[in-house]
Length: 255
Image (cartoon, rainbow, N blue to C red; front, side, top):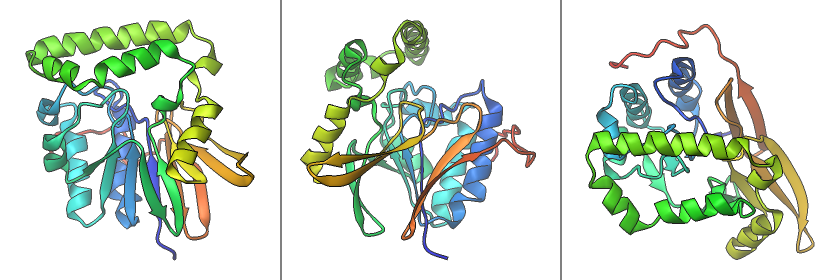
């Protein structure tokens, strides 16, 4: 059996969706344990107010599940998403996972592949891109993290509500990636393969880039079921992970 690398994104884990959290924990215990490595390309969590969150009850099972996986010898790499971009050193220490730059080049079973969350490619959504620039600014992050936890939680709730209302009023194509942005970043990094999440539109896109065949794989979200991209020397397979009966939904703080 060839060595397999797994990719997931957009889980949006939180206390309000215990069944999906349970599915993820089961995935860590079973499928991920046999992998060469696990890559989480953004939005592991629905929100992240700062690394104090590693001790919050709703996230503690996930932190412990990741720690068990990495302690067992499976490397885990996590990229910031647009919901959890404040994960930092305490998250790494608590989970044993390693935070990745966005974008990151990876030699994936002999093929150089670019990994991204994907939100930076949605250049047609100018409102979101302006917000992204604001919250990724180190000065803004320093000021935000200096606020009390309760105030940060209130601000995050407000952001989520604004985002929900804004998304409902936008045309779907505006919130998708811009093809020119895709081609530009792939040229910049000298790759013909790209894997990303964010748009919640799982699909493989094949196109021509400077006379060569290029591929872009979009990962699925974990709202109604799980979604995982499995890559080995033979190729890649995108599959769904249905909610099952293996204690899915049971989330314990002592996991």
